[in-house]
Image (cartoon, rainbow, N blue to C red):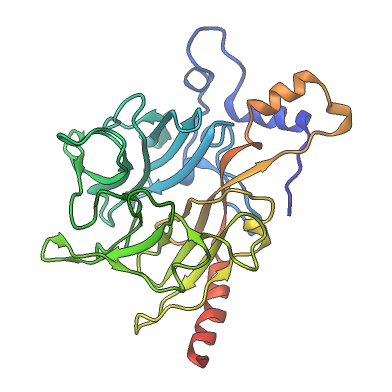
Length: 348
């Protein structure tokens, strides 16, 4: 179901979100950052229809993906990429004294030209894992590995490569964590474009040898960036090559029972997947109430708005075909779970 919005309405919404334009050299977001308070950057809670998350603050028209929220809800992390990932980094906004501060680049950024993406926080918020292709010792920049950084009394410490057995000479990315510390992630072998989903248990203070997840999880012809719920009861898997897909990469959900058996993947439906050619970054809030997902959707230009001025306005707005972050009430996941586990009990 495509969400259409006229350019005139789009401009009004953007101005309402970020305030009137400044006249100095600083960015509009710095000059005119709105006063926001309350959970989720002070945004009205979503319903069952997906909508843009924090228009003009998080969803701005820049290619935006990946969400991570601190357990107490006072920090929100998200990622932006410019120039086909020439520049890509993790941003964060923090609530202080009841007000949200403007987004900033994280202090542990690798700097211009380094790819930092896909943050995830531990259940207690003391450690953050993320993807980076930064140099590591004698290893040159370019290899995608999972890194981590620990919280200190002054903020964040020095990032460290997670190392073996998780990282290899191939690519490892999109870490996702259960509350007991089990790490789910995506891996591709060196020189391969085939992505497979693995998990590594946390035992005796270390990650164990990763295990390849079954075909219900590694579904389709390729899959990307899966999110695991903190209780390990389900995974959301962006998958390509599925017979019931709406577009190129759709979001699917698979459920796990007490015997570590996984249900068949279920398409998360047209509200999530229709008119979304690229979708590979799912996330559910720590309280389980909100589903966030990356989507590439384009707002419609009405015939009466067909002019150069409005084309420029669309290009500089969310809904311009770059990735945006959408959010919706996560209650529908419970309905999908009942169906999936019912089918799992019936067996083949």
